[in-house]
Image (cartoon, rainbow, N blue to C red; front, side):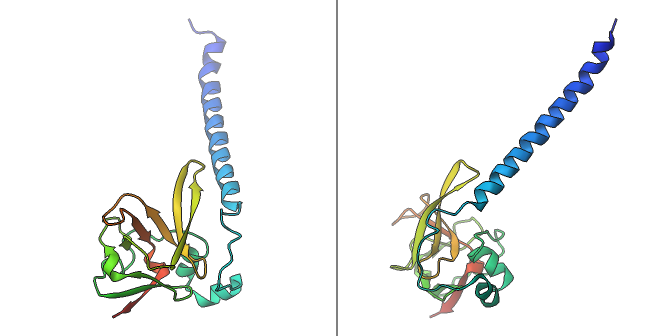
Length: 175
C-alpha cells in the first residue's frame, strides 16, 4: 500500500531534476557570456589600420562587420568564393591586405574557402578557447586585426595546414 510519501516523492524529484537542469543550463550560459566578454588573447596587439567601431560599421557590410570585427563565423557553404577556381589573390575585406594566393586554395570539403598557406607577412594567429575547453587557432589580418577564420593542422602537404577562412571576410582580385 502506498503512503503519503510515495505520492510526494515523484513530483519532488521531477522538480529537483528540472531545477538542476535549469540552474545548470543558466550556469553554462552565464559562464559562456562572461567568457565571451573577457578580452581575447592578443587583444592588446597594435595594427596599422585602426578605425573606431562606428567607422568599421560604415566601411563594412553588416555581415562583414559581424565576422571581421565581432569574430563570428558565416554559415558553411554560404560564400561564392568557396567554389571559385579562378587565378588571383584573396584580400582582407576590411583593409584590402593581400592574404592568400589562389595557387594555395583547395576544396577542403568544409564549406569554407580553404588554403594551405597564406602570403608572407599577411596574417597573424592567436590561440583562443571556445566553450572553456576547446582551444583553436584564430587567424586574423596582420594589418587591421580583422577575424578571418581558423587554422587547423589536418590537411594537405606541403604544410599540413588548413586555413579555413570566412568568405565574407575576403575579397578576390583576378589575375
